[in-house]
Image 1 (spheres, rainbow over the protein chains, first blue to last red):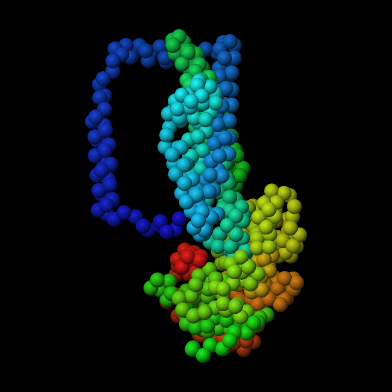
Image 2: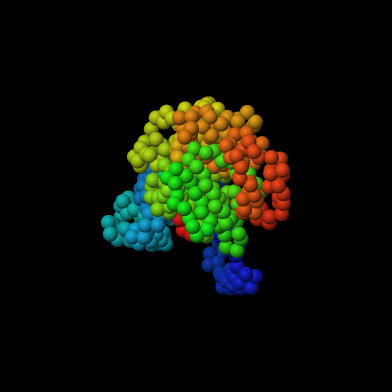
Length: 266
Length: 274
């Protein structure tokens, strides 16, 4: 936004911030106990893992199990992200305050929505998962809600900021042509931010897949759950297969994201 | 300036208007009258206050002093939701949405007339607005209407913005350098369209005030030419009486103004909040 340009910290203030962060960094580095490694066989453990990762378990039986785990993770991630976008994007419009404009009575609604988005995203998915498991028990519903809720907060906040940052002259111009707040939202703001938002949702899908694979532990099933079982059985070659499948999955989503992005941005 | 005569119902009038942006004096005081139907060109060097003048008449900024009347009504008293019928403004920066097609940008000129539902329908249904298409084609945009606006050339984008203004069809057309990126042939078509010589259904009876970079174009296409320098009217004549001396005089002192290029040195838009 133009009004932020040229408005920075004074030299002394800037120096104070640099010193503060430097102290925080050095304090943290000194605090960590770098020498405390309880496993005396760490070296041989690393060797076992390396062998397993060089020769992952590619038996048909294992690949079937991995494929099914991948599908579970993907379907839960996609469902969660869909719900998060469905809730987050409209809330983002309200929170941005761009439609209500100068209408003072509706301002508390925008502020309340902003607070709600802040609340949902300030708590991590894992904590939400523990809360939802406590409410509904170990169930896919708990896992999906645990991802969808904080993600709706993140998506809503990002969308709100993008809508606010659309250059004012564009809004003024359609305003002179007679557009009201809703029309300038539809004609200028949303079209301006849509390509970036779609590309951002793909990035969020990538994050949702990672989160869903971790949340396997709370009853979702999927990649993380299989990793957990394989680790307990010390089947490192199975762990390796799961690891590579997750890597492949993220690569595919990234590729899709790039393709869509280049199509809509060019 | 105290004996302000009553405003005529058919004129646009600035009475003793001046505008400052903070410490910087941008315009005035000027008193100008624009009779309905007259086509006026404003010429002058960068920083002369030409853009400020148009923005004041469009109601985007409020004068520091003085009053502006549109056809007998005080500008501020005109309901914001009805102002689009009175005045339309094509900015020098065009202000098009680069991600939308040329067609959708042109159709945005209908905003005042269209309901929210009609607007949504225009965005998601493959139905073309006939008038937008006619005007776009008339300005030589046929074949480019469904291209993304960001992919069009500067001259094509300028015609998209002009088409949007023509679709809006206000009583008063304000245009800031409407033909600066066009080749000579297209410049003539654009200015003749704006001044109601071509496509007269849209513009024939309308009043036009345009900032024009070239004195030659100003005298050739418009009824009246106003020379502006350092915020003051230097001359104000019927186009056929403007002499070389007038135009030489108005551009005298070009670039001595420290405020930079036309309009860009002004603060960010602050519509309705100042």
